[in-house]
Picture 1 (cartoon, rainbow, N blue to C red):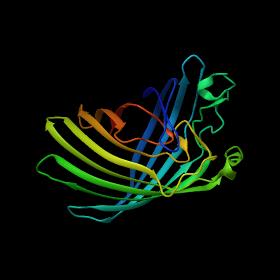
Picture 2: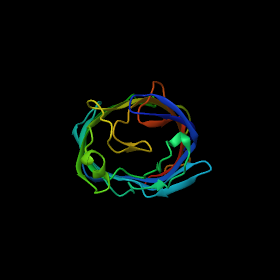
Picture 3: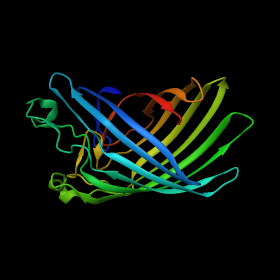
Picture 4: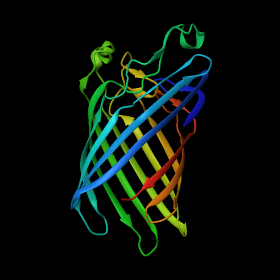
Length: 255
């Protein structure tokens, strides 16, 4: 969930806009198919964007499907994988002709997806400090973009996108029975120079970049059910995205 009046363009220049709000409901699931092979599914069931006094656009977001394989075991297990992002969202969502000077008298584009099929190449390593209940993990990925794009997205520089990469470092510690505290630092950036004139709306598409931290709490209600809450924000100037504090809440089940 995000509520803000700050928006950043491809160059990181900040502008003040009418109040913008974003909330979403998603489903994430992981399943071990066989030893060392894990499949993950990430479904943004509903992504809703609102510009105060003008309107709301909402719908299904872009779905992610991820496969990971453990190539090294032991105290520092390493995995590699491939993830596909499917264009299941609506890349054409807009609020029509609001006539607001802050928006240059144009339609406000509020898509729930970017209309492209892309592939993430992922790797990760983790370590448990057992018997101390603590862990650390590192994850990295490279996004090969625009394997396929929709006709709508092709209107913007023929549907081209600059590849992306991400890196993250996460640590967790259990200070109390049933309660975990986690801290993550991560970077999400363009692998090259972002180009103007491409699809880049509502924090989706070309040129999205940020360095951010995430502080989380996880409460283990029992061996099956857990609850989580996270707070996250950028700590340097972001690009091509709305700025502000994001709040996440979740319910987790172990089967």
